[in-house]
Length: 204
Image (cartoon, rainbow, N blue to C red; front, side, top):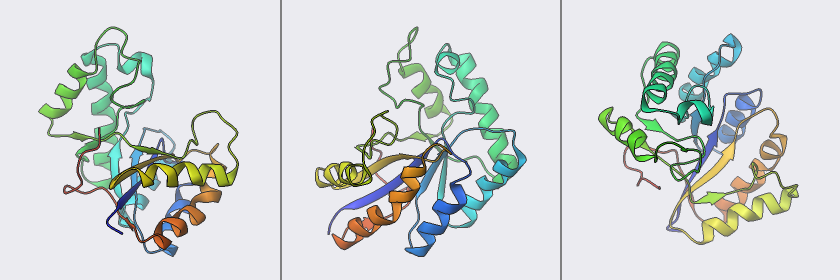
């Protein structure tokens, strides 16, 4: 009952975004999206849909291209400015949240450690969030629906502040299908489901 659970969706928006929002609204809860860039006008409209429904939005890079953005701070900065500019245009502000593609301890920073990129965000007063719970929807393993849900519940058991990693892409139909049952299981156990706010402890 003292647990706080933050459902987070990476890589959106997608064709599933509106359906995820509808499910969240059905259960009276909000979540957090870490979005990437797109030139698709229909998808761009979904950035505003996310925030207009009371959810939190953060940046997840524009390109999600590991080799590019982690090649140098200059390239990372260019990518950051591109997603920041797009969101400023679509939702009216630049979010102060960021999630590194692959997380802040990823192995994709071949030339540099992650620290120069963290320093860049800190100068922008942007907080970054990783996660401490996964459903496994991006592990390339053919989990059953029950296993996907149980992966998350097992992780939630281990933490008081739980940041759950999921993905909002067209290929993640199973994430969409299992979301209602996952929400019900969390709520039945008495935990709070919340969007990330300025008061949320940074999970890294």
